[in-house]
Length: 89
Image (cartoon, rainbow, N blue to C red; front, side, top):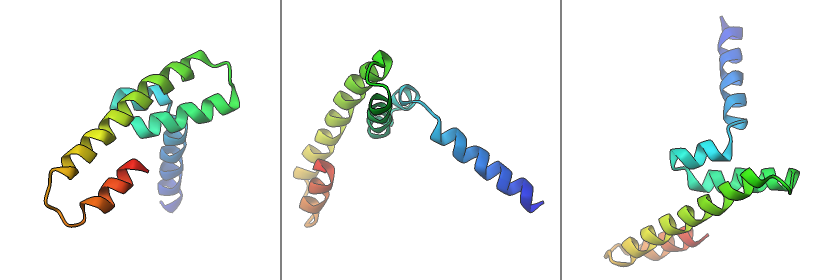
């Protein structure tokens, strides 16, 4: 029984590890899509699909982070600057 759970957990991890940047882009996980596209381009610099995913995902990721920063800037939260720095990182 234990072996079955371990096998299922390992299968899930493998599927997550091999998911493409394009799939993450389509799911709206722009930061992960950027990371995966960069990793793919480090392995194969001529990969046009990864380059296109990187361009689109990076634009979306920056816009998403800037929207959060703008929102935080308009709040009265005393810790907003810590959160804003985190978004810039």
